[in-house]
Amino acid sequence: MPQSFRTLLVGLGARGRVWARLLDEEPRVTVAGYVDKEEERLAAVRDASRVRTTACFTDLADALRTVRPDLVVLATPPMDRSGDALAVLAHGAHLLCEKPLTLDLGEAVRVVEAAEQAGRALAVGVNFRYQHCVTRARAIVRSGEIGCPAFSRYVYWRNRDGYRPGLNRYPLTMRQPMLYEQSIHHFDQIRFVYDAEVQRVSCRCHNPPWSMYRDDATVSAVLELSGGILVTYIGTWSAQTRMTDFEWRTDFDRGALVQRQMFSDLSIARGPDAERVVPVPLPAQEQLVDDARLLLAHVVEQLAAGTPRPHPSGLDHLKTLAVVAACEESHQTGRAILMEDLYARHHVPDRWLTWREAGRPEG
Ligand SMILES: NC(=O)c1ccc[n+]([C@@H]2O[C@H](COP(=O)([O-])OP(=O)(O)OC[C@H]3O[C@@H](n4cnc5c(N)ncnc54)[C@H](O)[C@@H]3O)[C@@H](O)[C@H]2O)c1
Image (tube, rainbow, N blue to C red; front, side, top):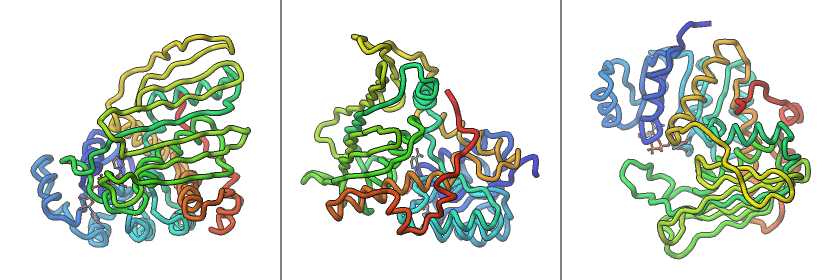
């Protein structure tokens, strides 16, 4: 096992630039090459980080042949992701892929299968799992301190300017942008914090007349999870006005957990008669950066230890992506979707569904 993982970063857009910084800072990684199909993106990284021209590529296959990386970080848009992911695994490298793994559950199953067959690690960048408010909420659930979660309301109400400089543009025209780009993080948090699996999904998507997104920017869903947990979810990028609302409240046997900011402000109510919540003290984090730094360090640590399916694994990610796919299908058909039916239709093996990840981050 190498002391330092020779790493190739693919995609130097809004997210890729964060990965470039984090990879540079991670001591167990040596960035051996950069790939972007746009020459100007490569030029920017050359200027900012004094990268050699010979380490810059506009073609992934070319880069894989030349650099022979141990690890590839894929930070391209998700549209054509599966072909690139399969090429990386066929080359014999480990893969850390941005979310969503693909925009098609069947393709995601094939990528996971390819990683399993190649014996290579496949991790997915669900960095929200590494926010302190999320790991702490998960620890509170696991401790049983206020009993078991019973039902919850998850509200994410935001006016996201898809034309803002420095932000990606493809969500403006992609299929179901809110679901595949944003709600996927929220569904993943819900599964992760409750340590429960979604069993049944009902969903309606919607796009208001003023939306700048071609397809639906609002998702309204009811998720029924193992353990009898009921979640009502509403997420939107098309709020009218710039007032952002966030609240994730969960009621337990003996209290409640409430998160009132997107990345912080967790509080707890203890006892069924509690009249107020008490803040849960947490260290500050740079949004979407510090959590990804922790994720990267954790993945590299597991790779160094030879963990075959490092957390957050592609195999586990299938169960979050499947919730997104179920939402889309429920919206299209007007029917509730049973997850076991969806998995059967996509030939997801039972052994994958019953497999449990070890080494999840704890608060
Ligand atoms: N986890 C998070 O918090 C988070 C935050 C933002 C974005 N993301 C994810 O990161 C991914 C990238 O998003 P982004 O905002 O950086 O998008 P972006 O459009 O800003 O950048 C994508 C970059 O990839 C390049 N590219 C496209 N296809 C390519 C290919 N086949 N080969 C090489 N380069 C290619 C483009 O030229 C561009 O530079 C998406 O999956 C997105 O969901 C995750």
